[in-house]
Structure formats: structure tokens, C-alpha cells
Length: 477
Image 1 (tube, rainbow, N blue to C red):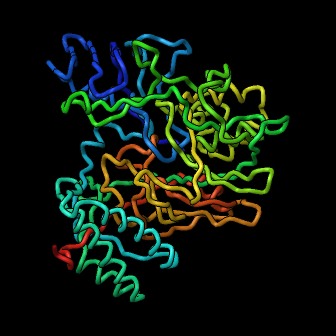
Image 2: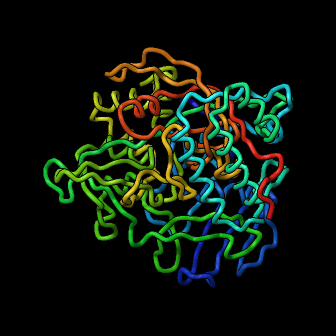
Image 3: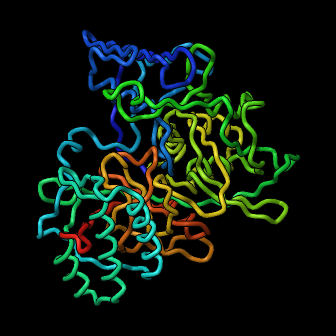
């Protein structure tokens, strides 16, 4: 799975925080790129170059949801600093992103009639109803007149809720394929990203809930900690200091007179820096299983006392995601065609002396919490296997009804893939991920179990993505 990347460079950026972590904290940001310079001090902005805002967004790595293991990021110093600097010789690679030229060409808009897809669904209606009702409840909690963007168009939250209600009523009638397509064309607008009136191709990947073995107490077998949120980790909302700053959140730790980046994976796993700073939720028996739990964002923990717990993403250390899959390809250890979660796992298991170095290549670290239910996405909606997808939340309408066409594996009982077959189905946009960036990326949530692991680990196929919204609401306020 090799998503495209875009490179940017910066000459220098310094972030310094003074005083206590509160709304009256002073923030200073300097940026030099030739003659350009930005300065933010005491909530006053004298200049705001676009590149600065983009860099601040890159530094804000506190998103939720899955992370696809093929995306590079930013290295982290192993030494606590009074300031955080990015120098001109560093390349900042945004993961899984589309080249700038293609981004400008792709426009999210209504589909021309000639390219509206033929709608068909390969799954049962029951799980689709569950997924749609999750989004419906989310919209009903919003103010009815809140606006949801569909490219340059907008619809109210009330309209979005009505869209889902109309769709559920249609599906409850058990329509024939012909009537399904007739009713959708008659009562719904179809949206998507288009380039020259053609649907923009989307790379589909997958994620799932892995199963880990663990214990509430460490011993010789269970010796790898699964951490909750550290007590010294702080988050800083930039927009609270000035409305001209992006609505992004930085993650770090307070060192008295400054907020500095939080510890990297290498520091946490190699130097035991979280001792006294964070309490383990549990201890697991396999460091590789733990790493892939970080990648997936949620999972299930089977304890040695017979209890099973749901483990969920709480927040990250704020450092960017770097792909160990890409690293293994670049080093010539796995071919681009063969890379998958399974092939990465096999390589690391057969080269244990390289494992720590390779895992540390990704500085991003995830902290977890336990819950009494399955995985939830970034909109706090419980995810439905096969129906919930993760997209770039800056580009796509949240919790909205969508339709996808791509491929899925047909697997034997032992997990071996026999073939790939085309499929289409209705899905709902209910999650996001730090590596799911741009209009050409989508991640399907597959749930848990052997098939989910197979599908999530091997899916890296092109396809199409469309969104549906009712032409007119039937329940007008």
C-alpha cells in the first residue's frame, strides 16, 4: 500500500509557550522563509503566511482513528528542548497525500448524470441500518440549522438527518435493484470528487480491531505496557489564542516555562521515560501486536483471567506518523508489490534483531482507554464493520451517507486469499485517520476476527466514492 506523498520544506519554525496552561497563555510563533515572517504575540497577528498555517497543521497530530502503515513523517529529537525547530534541511512529508496539481484539479460537486453509478449493495440491510442510525443520532444532537459543507454547497444538519431518514424508509421497503436506482436518482443528489467530469479514483485500504493477550499485572510473559494518557501530557488549542489561527490542537508536555513536543516512541519504549508519568492499562505479551494496535487505533484485550476488554484510542503523543512499510520498501527489505500488514509482521518476526530499530522509525505513539463497547470513530459514533469508513475530515461531510465501489478478498479458512472480487455498497463516513489525507484515500473498517485481519491487511485497491443527500427534506422545520 503505497499512497502518494507531497514534500514541503521550511527554513525555521519555533514554538514557545510561557506561563501556565490556560486561556491567557502567551504564544509566540516565528517563521522565516526568505523575506516572509510571521509573528503571533499576545493574541495579535502582524502577518500570517499560508505556509505557516500549513506547518502548524502538520505539527498538530492529535487526530483520532486509524493510521495506515505506509506514511512518512517528521523525526523527533531525543533531547527535551526549550523550543521545537524545523530546519531547512528537513523534508516534511504529509502521509498519503495527493500531489498539489491533482488536488487543485479535483472538485467536490454534484455528479453529472452520465457518471452517476449503478447502486447495488452486497451486504444485508440490518448492519446498514445500524450504521445509518448512528449518524442519524449524531445529526439530531446538532442544532438543526448548523451547516454541513458539500464542496461549495451547504446543507443544514436537519436536512442531513432527513436524508438518512428518507434513505432508511426506502431501504426498509426492500426495493428491487431497478427501483432502488430509480428512487435514488429521483430523490437524492449524488456528490463526489471529480476531475474533468470523471470520478476521482480513490485508493481503498482497511483497518480492524486486533486481538491481544494481556494481564493486569506484569510478569515474565506479559511485560510490554499498554499505556493510558500520561499525566504530564497537555494539549493546546491554537484558535483560543487568536481567531486567525487554525482550529488545530498541539500536543506536548509542560516543562515549567515552555511546552515542548512529547516523547517519541524510541524514548518511551527504549528509555522508559513514562515511569511515574503514565499508568499501564494492562501488560501484553508481544511488542509487535502492541505496535499494530497503535496503527489500528482500537482492539480487544483478552486477559489471562478470562475477561475481554475493549481498548480504544484516547490520544497520541502529537508526533507525525512515519511508515515502517515505506521504510522497509526504501531499504529493499520488502517489495512495493508485496508489502502488507502480514508481510511486515513476517519480516519483523524473522528479523528480531531489527525489530526495535524499525518500530522506532515511527515516532508517533498512541495512548489508550478502556470502554464497554466496540470501536468508536472520531465523531463518537460506534463503528459498524463493513459499513463505517474513515476519510479526511477536512474534505468530506461528517457522518454522511456514501456509496463505494472497489474490491474485497475471498479468503480460505486459513486466511489465504483465493481471489479478489468487485463489490459495491452503501457506507457512512464515521471516522478519520492521520494517514487518511486528501480526496484520494478511504479506509474501510472491517471489524474483528480472521477475515477482518485479512481484508484490512491486504486491501490496497482503487475504487470510487460518492455521497448522497436528499434533494428536498420531507420533514421541514
